[in-house]
Length: 260
Ligand code: ADP
Image 1 (tube, rainbow, N blue to C red):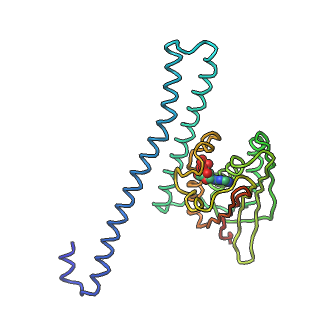
Image 2: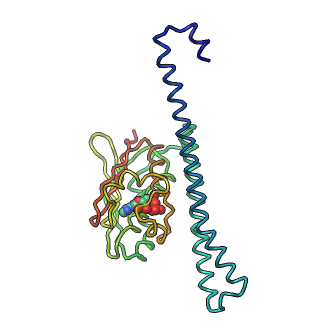
């Protein structure tokens, strides 16, 4: 109620107040716009696999599909349904992380050694890497930080998964942990894969942004992996550094405060 306040507040103090109303409105409008964009994107991303599932199911149902085609169509339906499940899981995880950030209701923080996170991530992704003919290793020193083990596992998993997927057969992925003298510990995922063009580097952490949509989809991507990484880093007050060159590779480093 501006008029009411105007009576009691000296003129000079009114200016920042009016400005804050203005910026509050801008923020709300911006949030609303982002929400609308997100809904439109999600609908589109869900519609594509659903259309395909519906199409193949109809071919089988009406008998247009020859018996010999049925297993292949069944496989396609399975692939598209799996994509939808992955997408819904990622959306739920993002919405959960949004709530965590907004309510400042931080998850259970404990001392976590990034070296253990890297070790376990390599263990879990070993088969995945072998299938793509990628060598996956970890190296580094003990790097204790205060964090959520499950979220850090997910962050590492997402980065590692990308480093394998956007790589060539015979490629290398290395997870590196380090602690600097200034008290910062870091987790790095380095690959010698296809790289990210300079002009795309500031966008890859946005929801649904992809450099090459067909490559992302063909390898099971949802376009949300790095958005989830960004959120998890933010919850830990960590910074992300991205270095990448096309046809040379990508290095992503997440820098944390050390646990004291
Ligand atoms: P996606 O599910 O498409 O992989 P992400 O949010 O994980 O979604 O990544 C966004 C985009 O950034 C990817 O589609 C890809 O174009 C690019 N990208 C991410 N990681 C790498 C990497 N290690 N090497 C090359 N490109 C990458």
